[in-house]
Amino acid sequence: MRQTLLIDADDTLWENNVYFERAIAEFISFLNHRERSSAEVREILNDVEREGIVSHGYGLHSFTHALVKTFERLSVEPLTPALHEAIHGFARTIAEQPVQILPQVPETLEYLSDRHELILVTKGDLNEQAGKVDRSGLKAYFSAVEIVSEKHVPEYRAIVNRHDLACESTWMVGNSPKSDINPALGAGINAVFVPHDDTWVLEHEELASAEPPSRLLVLKAFAELAHHF
Image (tube, rainbow, N blue to C red; front, side, top):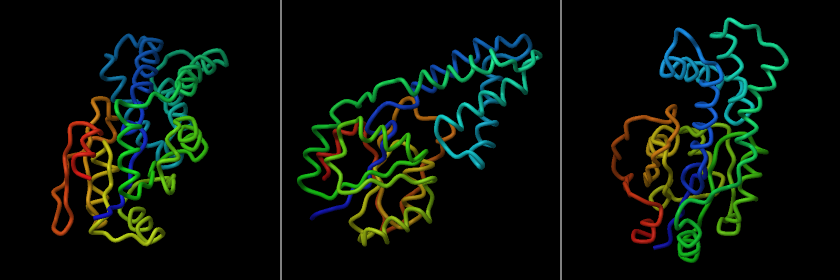
């Protein structure tokens, strides 16, 4: 039976958070706080990022803002133009990274696209995400691309309505319990959890249970989708 697969992008189709983690490690080393441990600095950065998402959304602009605010909160030094430029440099290293496709993704998408309808669903800055989609070389496998500001129950319901999808044959595939799996199940569709070792800490959440008629699959790798669809 033909299904519709809504497929996440960052850390499902290509690497993403690993670059942010490297930039954060470099930032913490650069800050070199004398009283706070690296773990304590990271917790403060996490809090600042949570606060910033409300007004700045997701993406490099929001991340850069969080680094600057964390520096201002913790450093005894004033934020000089030189320091400001150095902090922005950590974010630029992320933007300069090529799109690194995860193992067996292209061949799995090729197989799936012949059998089912695929829709790319990613959240974040419109230009950033659209640029990554274009550079990935994977766009041709998808009948549509949805770039949303947030992945929550109302947005999944809106996607179902926009594309006139049947909930019982629609699946959200992704690595984030918080953004991909739990809200999709809450919207009454099915979900496939494909974990990633470097999923962003702010996306961590306990997996919800699938309430019938919704279904939940938990796989070890993206390529396993070919065994189920």
